[in-house]
Length: 285
Image: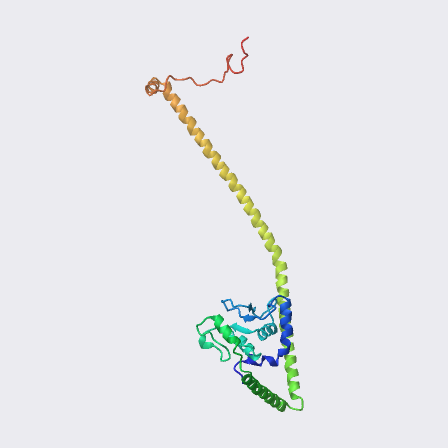
């Protein structure tokens, strides 16, 4: 009946309701106090006096009524949403299409590759045809009235429709109750599994942790023992080499060879007997 279903939005939210919604948004600093241009989120170019409209969704986003009221009270709507352009047209506001040119709605102005600011200025002087929209909405109202008459005429007067609906409602209630009971049973089984498996898992984890600590303790001691063995073996090799060198030097041939190499005379090994001239001897009087 109409080019876009959003053109029938004033039937749900009258134009007289939109100023109060906009004033509430202005009090919350969501909209500027003066005249503004409603910009959709996909508009990447800044427009003078532009106010970006957030998407509709759960709080803190806007509600559909707040977004529709902001578009209805704006000087121009700029965006690539066919619904937004249709809402602006439904409330008698011009709209500028920023999407693909081949998808531009018939009731919106397309920049056509030109600057967006020029298209916005052109849209301010180009108001949508109110007569054409009113004619289309009148056709829509007539069609809805005819549909309501057909539904009223097709409803039996003996109450069979009400009985069928009540039976269907009871069936849906039983199905919903069964699904709720199945969900409760599944939740109870999960809780039982957590209660029974949890302690076993905790005990197993503690055993693994204790075994890991025990293994690390023995590994550290083994590494230290291996390092001590290597150190003792190096000292043993050094002492064996020293003894061998002293044994060779004690011979005439070894001493002659050492003296020829510049080692000097053979020094006797140190003794453990300090004697009267040791460091602990008394000083001469």
